[in-house]
Length: 72
Image 1 (cartoon, rainbow, N blue to C red):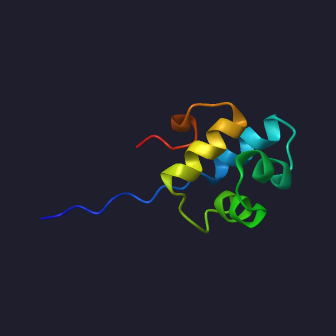
Image 2 (image 1 turned 180 degrees about the vertical axis):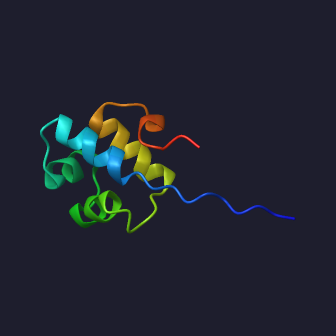
């Protein structure tokens, strides 16, 4: 029987890291090269991020991508 992949929500961690760096959603979006609406939807857990998006956000926040993904 196949197992479904877990849904990854990074909203709380993403918002906390962004705020610790005194960045607005617009600032983070620009640094990461993604849309502001994408950052907003991710922080509200309305969308699940692609791994490439997680990497872009991690680079922009100067953290390891694993710091954004909740522990299982």
